Figure 1 (cartoon, one colour):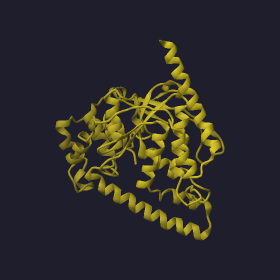
Figure 2 (figure 1 turned 180 degrees about the vertical axis):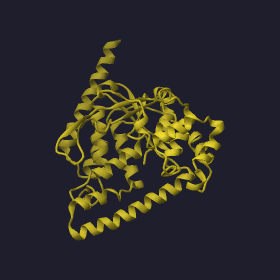
Figure 3 (figure 1 turned 90 degrees about the vertical axis):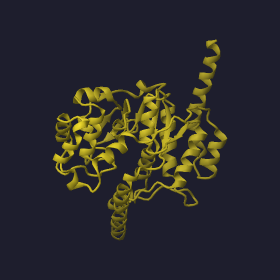
Figure 4 (figure 1 turned 45 degrees about the vertical axis):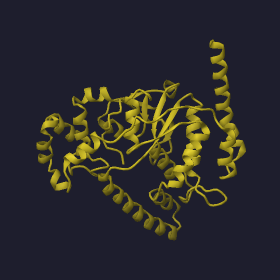
Length: 344
């Protein structure tokens, strides 16, 4: 979902070249959901190989990862672990949305309405365990490291930036700021030209850098108040937030209250009329989300044989496509090796 506070954030437009030789922590689930939602046929169907196996996630992951790697941007993918108990309600809500979308897709199918079919098919997207396993195999073949989070992927990615192992979290969502990520990069996945909604022309989209310290300074709040602000507008642990309170009103409220006074604030905001669980349970879940120091970030060379076995032999990717993308990466890796030798 993503916490809806983007309009409040101080943003600095940057270029992809500004991220050269920097390591970004990526919420893997977010990227993979983007791929299986958007990489579909005209009728909304997922891409498949000759055996009927879904390949949309692999197509997107291979294309985006090699594209960013070719620009000397390093990626570390972070996979979700066990979700907090409070997220169960949100998962049930999303499940209901998918069921409803499936019914609307079937109705559009009967009418042979391709636009409606594609729209509702995208809303039925489900990320399976098999897709996740295949994604990890692809990353390994590309020499790209991945980390298993004990809980939320964005929280672990945020910790890795705090720990100075990564430069920033790459995400469209602002949730990582709620988890304390010092830096967030948005639009890395859509940098370039993007078609305007319901229009024929395009707009230029550049990556954005959001610095947590700048955000807190600009808003005049601290990290605990930022968490409270997110709770007021809605998080994955209290979907929808408090009715009638948007980002600007939420900011006014948290500016008036410190952490020791949040009880009074949520009472005035009528938390109990919107949720059947305590505000403090949500606050503590976010503030103390489990993360781990037990990870290793190690970049390796592309294993072309392993890559072709997965993509060509198992999923019918074209040899030309793989060679074209990988030749650039292999050439870069060789050049770097040669440079390091002469550096001595």
